[in-house]
Image 1 (cartoon, helix red, strand yellow):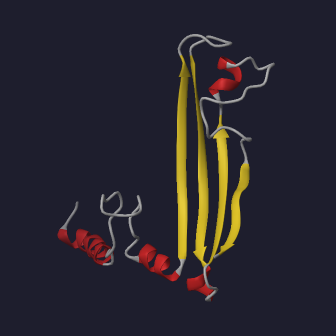
Image 2: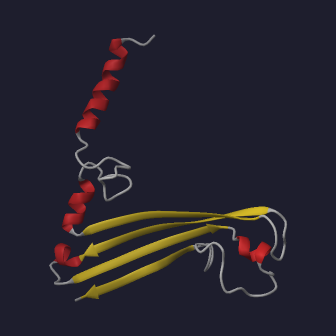
Image 3: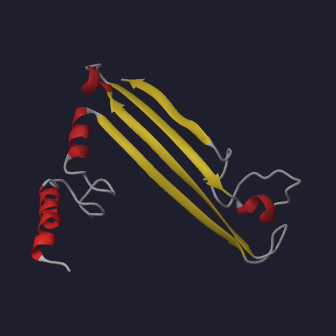
Length: 147
């Protein structure tokens, strides 16, 4: 049976957690970030020169009729990107210096490969842009810039 005595610790914990949230909430139209400001932590990190990214792109495509193989089918492919942008002027005091690192992972199947284009011939483009260049983890960006 649920009683006030049983609920008190849980409600106290919820109140404690809610009081720590000072930044924008997740999915807020006022937030720069889709998952919120993490209680102000992301804003603090950005002010210190650290900007972290996590991106996801998913693409679905279907072939209703036509193409090399006109069987009705659909394919899904996706991409995860993990990145960091470092303002080295703020972090290390290096005037006008920045560093960027991005790693991506692609997976899934591409509709163009076996349904739209003849698999025995090459193709110049794809209906799903995140599929290309292999279904694997890769270093996508790594650069240093100084102005």
